[in-house]
Structure formats: structure tokens, C-alpha cells
Image (cartoon, rainbow, N blue to C red; front, side):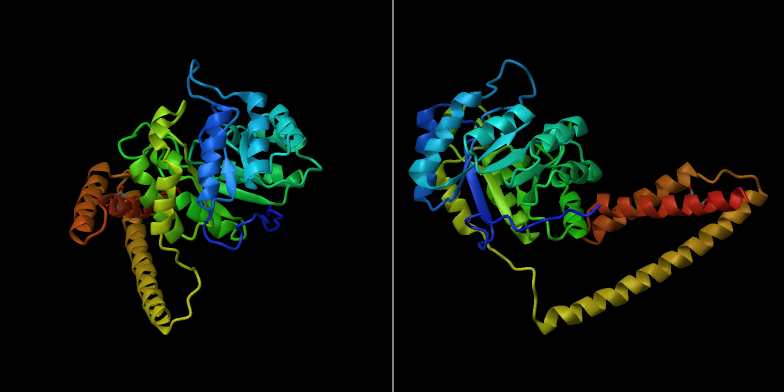
Length: 354
Ligand SMILES: O=C(O)C(=O)C[C@]1(C(=O)O)C=C[C@@H](O)C=C1
């Protein structure tokens, strides 16, 4: 199914990137107003704050709930910024609409749950409001698209996808792995869907916000959703990943905005070269598969198993090391050979079972 979309019609639609900033959580009226005032002074036109906070474990601050919604209304009235908050249930939607919240977003734990998504979609029927859908915690593009389809089928046409990274056990660098190939594939499949990057949740650390924002822009993302707090170290949630409005302004001022369109001759010549190389790659792969099919025939005649683990490991090790020597990541080289081997095994299976 295709998404039926309309432009977001947000105040800074024409600028790239558009920025939505604000604290992880609306903690107190003073903290909300102080952060909003500072952000508005820096030119920010869209404010975010979590009112209902899904926490991994019980006992943490789970948000002020409805009590905090009038604070967002005040932000709107006093600064003119649009206000956005996360919703996870039909009741949240009902309350957010009652208070006139301008933008809703669905979090990563909710978008991973089709029942929750459907219940929210039902609550959004007949409403015209921009809805942003964060990727599900697990790296499942179909689940992400499915979550957006449910909202879209309810009649919401102003939508955007928010890339906030994917949960993993390994948290050495990132809090949530960026796995850029997933949003890249989403953009390839639905080019008209605006893409927003949430560097705060991907990085989990202030130092990573600037490089992640730049990476997102280099990949053509339309907007940024960034956590900013008037006093980040005292934040009640996600303190490490929040920056002051001043720091945020500095980060944004350093970003290099690149455009996807190109009109120069130079790139056309280089793309021609790429096309020729890709042709050669495909021909070489076809040649390799022909040899694999011959081996398949041999294996059939000599009653050998298709999978030859020792030889497979040897290939992965050798090509991984070669990849490094040629300036590629060893994982990339092994990934390529894993795929080639997979196809080779598939073709030999066909031969052996004929
Ligand atoms: O060497 C073989 O036995 C092959 O069939 C070739 C090949 C490969 O594609 O490189 C395919 C399957 C085996 O598991 C190992 C290697």
C-alpha cells in the first residue's frame, strides 16, 4: 500500500532542516517556560516536550500527564511556537486534542505494537493534525511502514517518519544503533514521506548530537527532533542526551546543509563510470554462479553436502581481511560474501534436488 500524503505545512517547512526542540519531559511549569523562552529567542519555531513518558523500568519519572498540557498551551500563547508531544494511547490523543497540541508523535515502543497503533489510528479518525511516527525499537522496516499505514488509513495525511535508532545489547557508542540503511530504504520506498532524525535518542550522549545531525543532513533528512533543556544536568529523564538552547543553537549553526539535486557535469561522468563498474560486477557475479552450479553438479554426483563450512569460513576470513586492506570495513566485505554464498547455496540446492 502507498501512503497518501500531503505537505506537513509546518512553519519552517521551506527551511531544511526544520527543527523541533525541547526537553525530554515537561517537568515543571517553570522548566517548560524557561526552556521554551530560550529556544524561541534562538529562533526555534516548534517545541517538543514529553508529557507521558514510557520508561524501560518502573520507578522512574513517567511524566506529569494531563497536568503538563496547560504548560504547553502557555508555551504556544507566549512564544508563538507550535507544540508537540508523544502519545501512546487513544486517551492521550483525546487529551492532546482537547488542549490544542499542534503535532503528535508516536514513540518507538508504541510503533512496535500493531494493536496500540490501530487503537490510536481509530482515535485519529476525522482529525487533521501532523503525526510523526518513530521507528519501532527493533530494526523492522515493514513494522515501521505498517504503523504509518494504520495512521494514514485513518485519514491522517500530514505525516513524517522519525529515525531514533534501534535497540541493541551493544551500547558501546550509540544508545540506539543508527542502522542508516533502514531509513535510507524507507526513503527509497516512500520518497515523498518527510524524514526526521532524532539524534538525541540515537546518540544518548550530548557529544554525538552534532555529528549525527550532520550525518542526517548528508543523507537528505528533512528535519531534526532534538532534546534541549534549560538545565540539562538536572533533567529528570535522559539528562546525558540533552543540551541547552545555547548549545543547540551552536550545533545548528555549524551544520552544512547539502541539496540532493545536482546540475553539474562532473557527477554525471562519475555515475557513468559507476554504471560500467556495476555492469562488470554483475557479469563477474554471474560467472561465479556458473562455477558454483558446476560445483553443485559435482556435489550431486559425489553425494557431497552443499554447505562446506570450512571453505565458507576461509572465504569470509580471506575477503574480510582483503576488504580492510582495500580501505573497506571488514564487516562490509564479509556481508557481501555472506550474500553471495547464500545465493550460491540456493542455486546448488536446486541442482542437487533435481
Ligand atoms: O566450495 C564449494 O564447495 C562451493 O560450492 C562454493 C561455495 C561458494 O559459493 O564459495 C558454496 C557453498 C559452500 O558452502 C562453500 C563455498
